[in-house]
Length: 404
Image 1 (cartoon, rainbow, N blue to C red):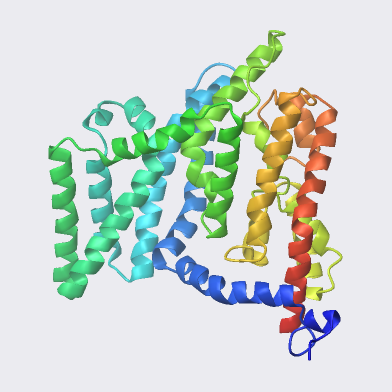
Image 2 (cartoon, rainbow, N blue to C red):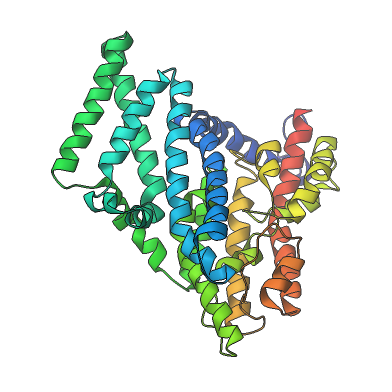
């Protein structure tokens, strides 16, 4: 006998709709794999090291702007970026090597020696002539070169220790990575140059819808695995789009048409609440039927209003979450479309000034564009993202209620 339509929407215990059960299946199949990947020592080490290295970037940039660069603030900022990224790469090299050693239970000194050897020999010969040349190279592919070299060094030491236990295996692993790196260096093969060539197209997409779409998508995808996407892509993206921002500022002060729609401050419209446009999700959870989600939303509301969503990513958690991960990817891509359309049809001024993304919501976009219509665009974007998040938040609530 066929069940009624009402009964068919219920699971066997009558408490969970079939659609929620589908998400439960997705959570059961996808989440374990994602969590295994996320709990891999290399991923954990990278997740721990990137924020520290990003702090090194900010400190180095501040020092360079105040003490070593000349001109107005925007020019100092633009000129200081390559050197700051060079410092960030060095900090990441040291911190990531130490974190990998700790996670893999390897001798820290040996891991540092292997990683530094691999990194030094992965750079082109010409970079050692001056700090300017070194900064120019590390400003494009430094972070990725560090990651490749550290992972290669850790892999070599781990494999050697499996074959030959103890310090003998450790020394063997360091020797192997040194010989391989030296051979590539002698053959004039630079890992850093190869990575720069591979990554160059992302920076050459320029002032386009495709560039905005790809950058937003890649950053969100990396964050879902606990990797700080904006920090990882900053070496490629920030110099290009900060230069576009500087050109917009110069054009505005010379009473010319703004040349670029996509600049650093454009991302304020795409990421309300932080990467993934998570503010609407937090607002929806304020009225959740699940007490834990209401408490979480209250605790993360203020950080979300200044576009800081690390508490959301790791507190909910949103990382490795196969249900909320779907709107986390879709919402920013939808906002890329609304934002680019509004800017290209001149419904809202393109961003004039570079401002920190941590300024309060709505204030940031108004000061960046000097256009009151930017407030309306951001409000529309929040509503659009909220509409995308809504069904998934409701599904997630039902899954949480079924677990309780």
